[in-house]
Amino acid sequence: MTARMTPTSGVSLGIASRDAAVVAEASGVLERGTTVNVGFIDGEGRDARLAAVRAVVRAGLVPVAHLSARRLASEGELAEYLRLLRESAAGSHVFVVGGDPAVPAGLYANALDVIRSRVLEHHGAASVSLGGYPEGHPVIPEPALWAALQEKAAVLEEQGRAGEIITQVALDPDAVLAWIARVRDRGIALPIRVGVAGPVLTGELLGLAKSFGARADHVVAKRYGLGAADTVATASRFVDVLASRADPATHGEVGLHVFTFGSLVRTTEWIAGLG
Image (cartoon, rainbow, N blue to C red; front, side):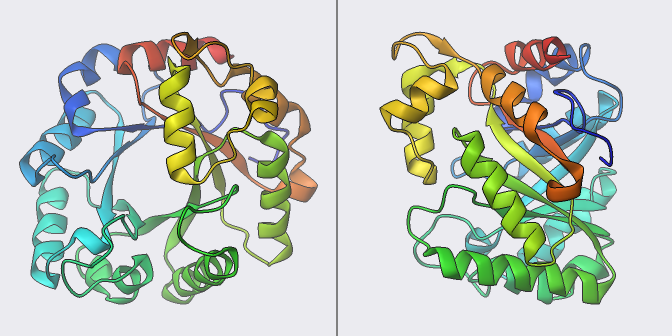
């Protein structure tokens, strides 16, 4: 966005394969053409991910399949998945992440290995989303995160490929805005979507946030507007602060990416209510 951010500008959505059955119902409150990321999650096989991608397409939404580098056993597996995505009208935009396994399943140790492999280009992936970590990563040091982000952005530019950055779930808007300013200071102009959680139980959100490396102490929890562990939390206050303080001159193009950790239908209804 070149204008000041509003709560619903640039919203994209992240789902798991298990959400395929309710995508059609949830799509009724989303703008046609909304981008929907389909995760690459342990326990959800390729057929389940493809079924979710196809459900997104049928609903008039735009799928973005995740590629988890450390979970890919071979270049052939990557190429075959991209081929199947292309046949499902879903291969032009992908989200490439390193993934959680301590030991790579195959050739790819990180997202950069996948991006550099040229397999994406050969199979028509014209746009690549990258991960961002405004509040750090549980196992990767901050200097390594910055180096990787700068190198991935540079490689995309060299390849002439479009891209964007989608951040991990964050709870502290101050940290997010400061991180975005540092991204711009480093010459990275890619659009940024700030990751927030859709409606989910407070206890679950705090657990997820800690596992992702986000700050989740009592100060941030209060600022975020969290209640008791068994109450439903939303990112509404966080989004309001972000929207009021994001400055195009400092932060560039900024939107939202909503991760569905609870009900997809409830999440889309919450998104519709932001405006």
